[in-house]
Image (tube, rainbow, N blue to C red; front, side, top):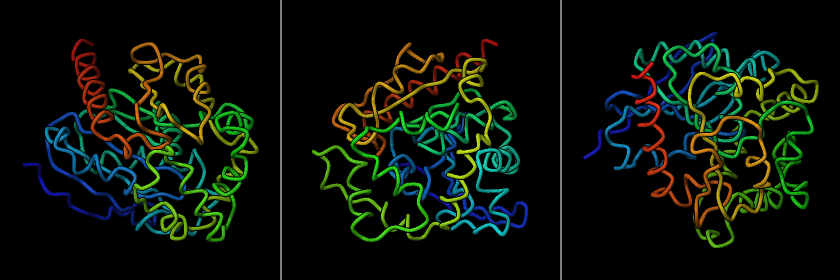
Length: 283
């Protein structure tokens, strides 16, 4: 029987950051969600029996979920801003070794923060448009989903746009799976979207490709085999070191494999964490 999930707020730079935590053994797994999302995108992992041996930590970024909205959006709602907050937050939660699992924006934040993350033994990114130039975000999405990309980065969206946005994240076969994507979008500080878009447009971020190429810890890339939103070849073509040598394709899943096929996803996550543990013990 897995331990209960406990909620806690951590004060940092005049912000209360919401964290959900399930006690377990080291290494810890730290989960980061995407833009306009919340802990809900990792809910199946927080409740997973397959992950019951690990200390699980899900962080809600400022402006998202039940974390505070920032009074300094131009500082906190950028990739460097999120990364700095993560670097400062983790040591207040745990001093053990950990793997970071980042979905979409969460993957960007993990990569940006990686050079300053102490005790990090691996990074797993799920459908992240790795920042190197503004064009990278466009290349990461299918050309016929430009309107969905626009919704992802615009200040506000109507119900029709949000319905198309939410269904695009799932494989066609998984359209029956309920998500909180539309509600999470509405609850997110609109400036979190616009400030991030403006910041990335002027290349206010590190060279994430270079960080991954120089990383001293294993990195895994994951997507779904039936992704109707992201361009699958984007992750496959990234010239970065990859655990197993290639991008992991989750069967029967689209852009949210951790939700759509959690059993397969969790199996791969466990394999990756154990690989990272072995590598860290060998160093």
